[in-house]
Amino acid sequence: ESSDDKFYPSQLRDKYTITKTLGKGAYGEVKLAFEKNTCEKYAIKIVSKKTFTINGKHKTDLNNQILSEINILKKLEHPCIIKIKEVIDTPDTVFIVLELVEGGELFDKIISIEKYDEPTAKFLFYQMVQAIKYLHDQGITHRDLKPENILLVSNETNESLIKITDFGLSRFFDSTSVMKTFCGTPNYLAPEVLKTRGQGAYTNKIDNWSLGVILYICLVGFPPFSDEKSVQSMEQQIIKGAYSFPAEYWSGISKEAIDLIKNLMCVDPLQRISLDQVLEHDWLKNCPEITKRAC
Ligand code: ADP
Ligand code: MG
Image (cartoon, rainbow, N blue to C red):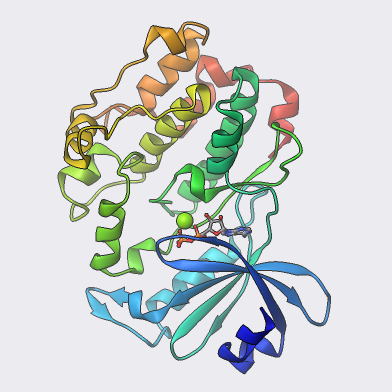
């Protein structure tokens, strides 16, 4: 691994020792790093500037819109949002130094345990709602909420604290990268995003839709839409809001949970439930104190 070291710019190498890969997404690779002065561990997200654009134009100079955006992200402070420590800007690549989370992705956890029981799902979901409400209150839409971007603090217990990552910057990536989203599974994309193929103007309500899809998956371990036929057919299902709660899997789950999912996965963004209303919803309003203390 240390043979890779020479490929990193000295700006980064002087301060951090970069080791193994922690994860990969559409835009970047995330590596484990040690700060040399403190021996503290961090996650460093490596983003090639080839993918950065502003108003459709490629940018290699971050002195403007993107830097000011990153500065906003650096000021965010919430227990369920990944903290950005610093951003190291080099000619070809941006290195984003992040708080490290070691329990893995919610995505892998659901695959390994199949599904969460309702109290545990509530514990996790309450944190997600608080975190996304915090982002929305700061004027930030996540845009890419999915179980790969929800990290677990601990893998030892199902009742883990969560931290949300990968927010805020996606609007600076170029349209070929946006197309990557459309090549991947559209499972979490709100109908209004699909209808306009990512070209429309939409609000932070797109995150509320994704939260509904995530809650559905947490409770039964499979997604509300199926791509068995084709991705196009899945997109049509989403646009129509054609999903159901097969009794075989949902009969043991409370009607309040199902009602909340229906309110989040409401095709019309204007009718879709707000996050303040989610916190007042019957499924969450009386959640245990321990859950409320998580964030
Ligand atoms: P992308 O924009 O390419 O999707 P992400 O920021 O989502 O990149 O990171 C990709 C993956 O790297 C995540 O799904 C996760 O597995 C891992 N990862 C990201 N941030 C951290 C972190 N702070 N701590 C540990 N792992 C992380
Ligand atoms: Mg990601």
